[in-house]
Amino acid sequence: GPIFQYPLNQEQLLQHLREADGVGAKRRIYKALNNENAVVGHIEFNNIDMDNQSATASRIMVSPHFRGQGIGTSMLKSLVSIGFEELNLHRIELRVFDFNQGAIACYKKAGFQIEGTLRDARKAPDGNFWNLIIMSVINKPLK
Image (cartoon, rainbow, N blue to C red; front, side, top):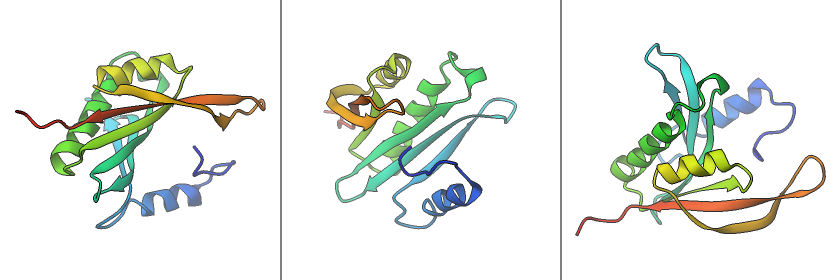
């Protein structure tokens, strides 16, 4: 992601973790464990904005050996639950490349809806540009 520089090193990771510490941190980092307590995934809240009750779900990663088992959907549903129930968020958004159809399907299963497309939003390694899709889920109060 854009917050890390290549090559990734331990200091960059430690700084990233430090930014999630303390009251009022704008980031929360979580790891997903399986029944054997092995790490199978990683997910974060970023841009936590308590004034507007919003945050961004990001760096949603499932270890390659564990993909296709519903772990990503489960992780995202858990993150949404934390956001709505513990952080009292109203809106959670994410961005995903338009060609990542597996991730888009996962996000839809977790309740996210497509809002729009940011055209040519990221420059690809080959010099072309990639589109980003914006998706969100809203905490709607029961009537």
